[in-house]
Length: 425
Ligand code: DLL
Image (cartoon, rainbow, N blue to C red; front, side):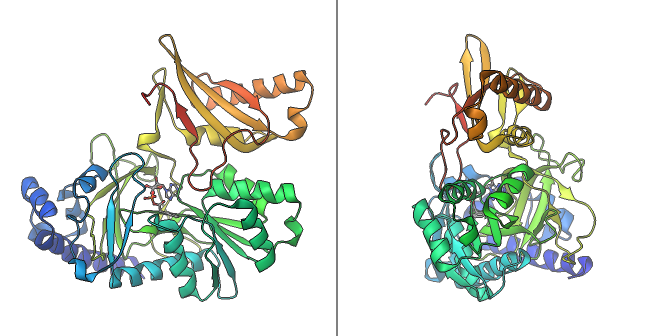
């Protein structure tokens, strides 16, 4: 859709959704009243900036159903975020929402190259998590054959891939990496028919993309979303692999400076925190949701012809930032530095602790089997090389420990890369 037409559609939908939340959700009405803004004040897309933000804590405060705009009679599905770090956030979908979601998932999968001839293995968890079921309905809509395997039982995943001739794998990048490792160990790579990997649900670097493409023998694309806003389907890479197209007919994206809440000064350069407003959701519309995900908007048109604005890969979550002796460090920077070094396996763990008054950053790095059993001098040279690379990239010293292949934890869903021993348990 040409941009002017798209923006006119966004405005019409924005006005409708603001009115809906004002009429149906006491929580939003109270917030808008406190901010001195009413539905009739929204006359242009820029007026969205007048609306108050919504945070995860706000939605937690509405537990379980207070943020729903549709009556329970019209809600046909409920998902929730895992709630491992506090009260869960609960989201409800109407029939219309589910149709829209399937449509966006089919769009995402088609953009990544999936066709009706594919056999698609979904290795995301099914359940309250939106990854498994969200992708499932998209695959059915595309008309490909879905293998609803869910996550875990990794040896069985490989067996299924081989027996059923899976051509597409859908999971988190860290689980994809774990499966790649198992495939390597079992030596059955040549017997597999995998050709595409659709990865999302957690941040991953270009280095990880290369490792996944090589390890699984696939063309790998990224897809982004979050349960509070929809689940997967908010943004996706096309086969150009150059940024993720935001489904702008259903979401209004903004980039803000996370410190001030003002529009990011340089959205194409330094970027900012992504803020999303749902434009069509009926069950639980969300106004200006602060995702905490940091990214940039990519300028220019995409060769694929889609006009939806592209966001870069998520470089970090603002809550994942580690402060090491006063220096801000993001786990993604560490991954990027590590994977630029030949001989480093894409498995690592970050441990932060305190010795006296000093923060200590330690990076456990798996190296290839050959190197691990190699002479001490070679190992020392590798350690020094990684240490130097980390120090230049991060601006802070990191202790490097080379560990045996297979010794850092493997993930079946979202990887936990950081252990911060400074925090009370
Ligand atoms: O992870 C939804 C999803 C499932 C997206 C499957 C893609 C594929 P939540 O559990 O609510 O929902 O977690 C959302 O995960 O705010 C990001 O921090 C992170 N995230 C999701 N996708 C990506 C991605 C699902 N492609 C949170 N790159 C988000 C970086 C991602 N981070």
